Length: 227
Image (cartoon, one colour):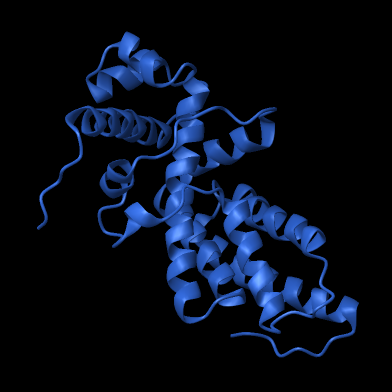
C-alpha cells in the first residue's frame, strides 16, 4: 500500500467530520433529526460541542453533509456504469445505489429527504477532501478522484449522453425530463423509505421505464428501450 502523504491537519479534519457524521447516522436510526441534540452527537463522536460548531455552524449543516457524502457514492456508481454503458444504464445505476442506501439507512435517509424538501438555501459546506472521500467509502476503488457533485449534476450529464447515443430522441427537452427524473428519485424514496424501503428498487425500475416510454411517446419516437 502506498504511503499516505496527506497532511496531519487534513486527516484530523476528515476524521472529525466523519466521526460526527457516523454519530448522526446512528442517532437517526431511532430518532428524528429534531429530537437529536448536538450534545448527543458530541457524546457519540467523543468531541466537545465547541469542536462540533467549529466544523458545522448549524446542526442542519451536518445533515446536508450527509447528503454530500452519500451523493459521492451515487456519483461513483454512475461513473462505473457509464464507463461501460453510459446514458440510461448509468442513470439506472444511480437509482439502484439510491435504493440500496434506502434499505441500509432508512431512518437517516428519510430525515435527509425531509430536510431537502424543506430547506430554503443550500448550506456552505467545505468541499470533500480526497482523504475524506477515501475514509467515507474505503470499498469504492478510486473514490478520491470522483467529483464532489450533487445527484442532479450526475443525472443531467447522463441524460444528455442518452440523447447523444440515441437512447432517447434528439428533440428530448433535457430540463423538462430532469424535473421528472429528480422528482422520481426523491419522491419514490420519500414515499416508501419509512413504510417499505425494500420496495424502492422495484418502484424505481418501473417508474424509470414509464418515464422513458413517455419521453419517446411524446416525441413520436420509436427508440428501443435500454435494458
